[in-house]
Image (tube, rainbow, N blue to C red):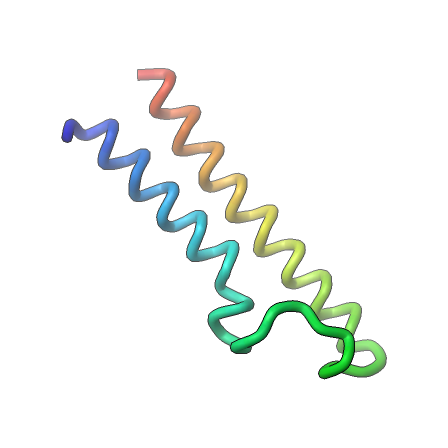
Length: 68
């Protein structure tokens, strides 16, 4: 594997870890039964941001891979 392939693979792994970090930390997927009130909104926002940031990391890795 050359340097570009390793960088692409590492960015995909890091992006997936970021995307699934709320599930890894809490031990469950999004559930409105476990959280009440304002925490429900905060949990939804954090999980959505984790998915967006993870996708951005993967996108950046693919963009750099295709550029070189």
